[in-house]
Amino acid sequence: MFRRLVIAAVAIATTLVAAPTANVHAVVTVPEFPGKVYVFVGENTSLSQLTTKNAPFQLGMIKPNSAWFSDYWGISHYSTSNYMAMTSGTFDRCDQLDEKPATCNHASRNIFGMLENKSISWAAWNESMPDSCYLVNAGVNHDLNSYAVKHNPAVYYRDIVGTDFSQAAGTDPNAPCQTKVIPMGGTGPNDTSAFEAAARADTTPRFNYVVPNMCEDGHDNCNTSKGGTIKQFDDFLAREIAAVQSSASWKAGSDVIVVVYDEGQDGGIGKAQKFAGGHTVCAVMGANVATGVYDTFTNHYNLLRTLVDGFDLGTAPANAMNAEPMDIWQP
Image (cartoon, rainbow, N blue to C red; front, side, top):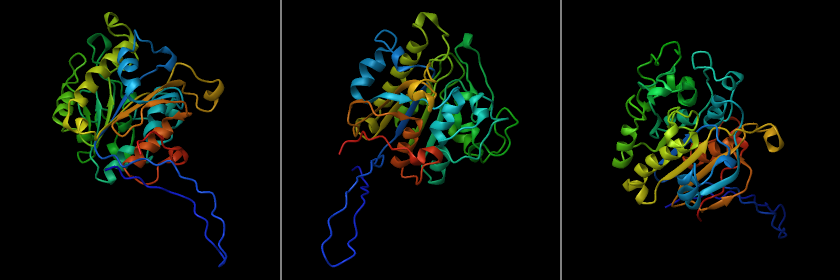
């Protein structure tokens, strides 16, 4: 059963005479997630770029079966700042410059650390990452195995990695990243076999943050025969979401799938003056989601607030604290 917490402002009578009831305002609430949550993150794509040719899975399957946000925005440019915003509600200048964890690491409260503190299982899955807790780039586009650490937000946080960011992988054997920031498969071309096996077998943790390699996330056009950057991410989603939806947990109606991009190709005008990460895509699927197109102005802070509330983690960090959670849930 989904648990709703209803918060209302109630007038308190100060005399024995019946006082009129004050306006009652129901705050947007998120039902406690009963199963697993999967967040799939793509790169550098504006909503206006999606077509039935380059995004048949997103527009043909995801959109009609999701809460589809038509006014969703990234927070900044470039990549790392958006990943930080999405997972900790804030970012620094070094994140905007896409610096590596060795020179840009944070003590910020973040979704991974908050889950860890509540003993809720989680994993940050990274395609083509050569080893757990890997803090530098690896692979190349030519071999379809390019891992970019700038797209792996978990390894920027000290409560996940430890204090030593100087080596290729974290040096603290007891740090969460050693067992929870993990590869999706091997370093062969576009290998996601470990994640798919875990998803089908229902052995994935409660929270799964899933990041493709540079060839499948919409960032680089590594295989021109596959139809361009957006189509390569679309194919990735079709493959990985099929694995998730074959699980018993999904079939039981327990799970939630989020598809989001870090940033769009636009920014700097209109609404993007404050949230200059561009007008991009976000969709949420699940049995408890009221499907439809939502035109409410929404961004990474709203998504983070929704995740924090759904896992009952307490007060959301930084800018997510004052962001409204997504109001998309079945009664």
